[in-house]
Image (cartoon, rainbow, N blue to C red; front, top):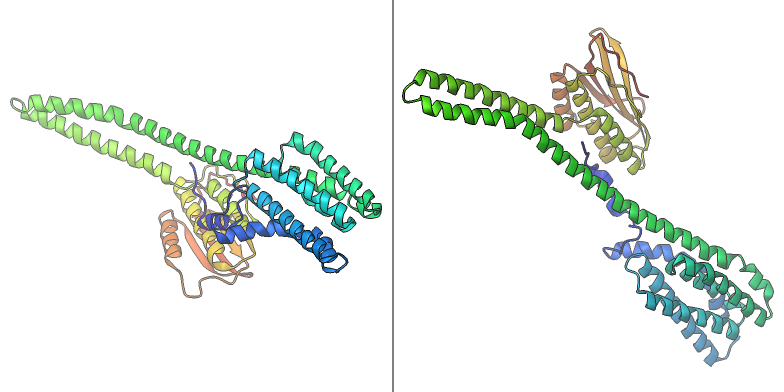
Length: 399
């Protein structure tokens, strides 16, 4: 049975910067831009060189114009690559312009401008196919060394000799990681859709098997009753009675089938609890593979609902940083019980009394013969749910 994501997990996912996707609004665009701006640290030397006054006014103006054009092209190409990348021709042209600007500015203004080759290397790694990036990044490094030699400052060039290729190749790795993340997201969506389709087909098969025979029998007996009604009303009445019995049994079968699909499973809820707590940045201790052999279905369903309500309260209201989930067998005066304990270290709780969720849980557990305790524990809020287990059935903790 497929399980819907926890609401707080969905909200958190919506707040994250979506890797490999275009920004949906201005706030997300700003967050994406923050990932690009720290790389502008290598512009400190060119800016300082222009602001020092060592160059004539015309050269300084030319330098500022070239630097602004270089940074503008860099930000446009790299930022668009995060969402809606430019076409191949535009990218090649932009990188060529950047390469020419970096060479011209470094030759014209000196070794302080060699840091521009770092950005050219980044653009090669981010935008070019891997095969092209593998040779354009070393070519950029070679151009930087030649510019440093022309400026008679090989010390500065050697200082960037490893930075330029390493940054470029690191960008190729990040690009592959982004592509893998996008493919993984698509695969997960496909798997979820296939699981939902399979569940619908399974339900359709079960309903067909449940109702096909019953409805055929009802149809046949209805025709018999119609033919018998004028001359043999007593026989027609027996056929109608049979129709009623078959109809009631069919209704029971359908209700059991639907209830089976809707009943939560404790193992699935434990896995969902781990995902929800991790997504909410809450340190979680959750049993991995609980042994629920022989546990009554009503008791398991009641504990599953209790776990879902407790984890929802931890994520939404507690403000906790840690949460512990335990599933143990306890021997009580009333016999063996399966006990679920959820305890967090947050400040939330039942200061204003139990809410509708806890009241509903208590009613569910009561129907299954269990009990519910909720209140302040040693660290924070603590919820304990218990359901009885038959004496001849053993249940492991799974912790």
